[in-house]
Image (cartoon, rainbow, N blue to C red; front, side, top):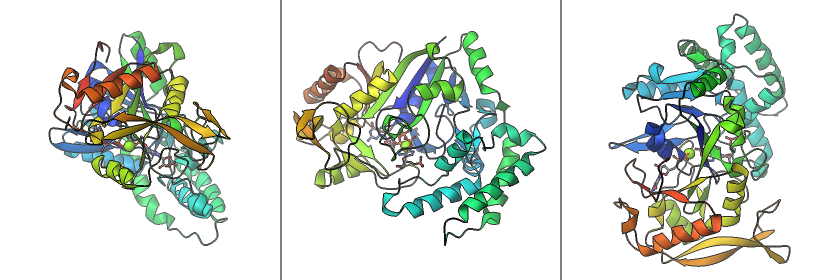
Length: 428
Ligand code: GDP
Ligand code: IMO
Ligand code: MG
């Protein structure tokens, strides 16, 4: 069987958690391939809301297996809290979750380095979630990192200490940065002992063997394509490959095993943290989108920056991921807006362009908008797209024409049930 990949096409928080949860019943295995506790994936069903950070969003379905792949970075303390929470909700975590031995560990000192580095950047800060993501991936590519599999070996504490000593020297370069490492180490080592009781696997073998045995896999992305380390708005990005290629390196998948690529986007745009955002709205419309969309970070609680949909950016993300199906989220948030705007290009160095240029700093690019009539109806109870307001249907048709990829799901609210499948979506 093949692998399908679901990933965000914007700056994260597109609604990946909700849709993975909706699609899980079609798959035997749900696997996270990159990122770590910087992610916050929200699921709502049966009147309750859950936010997952490291654990795949299929965990509430007893029939599927969830895998944390080698490309993920794990903070043991946050991970243990997440699991404790799931156990409270009667999820038999050890039966449905497996962890790659090759996933890297976020040390307390990685978090300290993240905080020190961001503070030192001042007004140029990335706006990191401060979960230690950057420093952990730096140690991974720098060949210094510690991996989950290392906790099963006797030299783990020595290797930990060796890395921490190195980090302490680095922290000493940040004048005035104070910390209490001992306070952080206690819970961290407790959580390490807990992880030892979990199902640690060589996930690349498990994944490939499962494929040979006819199992179906959904790879769940974190963050979004515009936060990708190579293709995002560098340096205001995260430190992993958030694009489709990341599912290969983050799970040990061969590229030719990938079948569908589900690209998920909001019917508008949001961004949390720093960095260019050409269609950002600094006016009442931005406030309205934030209020109606409840645009506050699932991980940090920070208000999300809001703006109109950006087609050149979306086309770029579709191209680099090979998106086969589009999923449009939060359509309900646009209800009641008389005229919607969609960015179709930019004014750039005196000419109009319809692609994403190398830099999109404010002042360098100015969005060109097309006005589109909005719809006034509340669509949160909509079950069949045939009954949708005509202007919503037209919005969807317009986007499909521009993006040249079918929209196969329209989401009209945060709940699992508020999900409308469109057209012939047998595979979705
Ligand atoms: P993720 O990181 O991509 O999983 O997305 P987040 O969970 O960080 O953010 C998406 C937010 O939008 C969450 O609060 C979801 O509950 C909510 N949400 C998802 N889909 C919809 C939708 O169609 N309409 C509305 N109003 N909210 C949605
Ligand atoms: P999900 O999976 C939105 C952003 C941060 C910051 C930048 C770098 O929920 O969509 P990092 O902590 O990785 O060093 O932060 O990336 N960021 C996210 N924004 N959703 C996320 O994940 C994000 N993960 C990181 O705000 O701008
Ligand atoms: Mg999120």
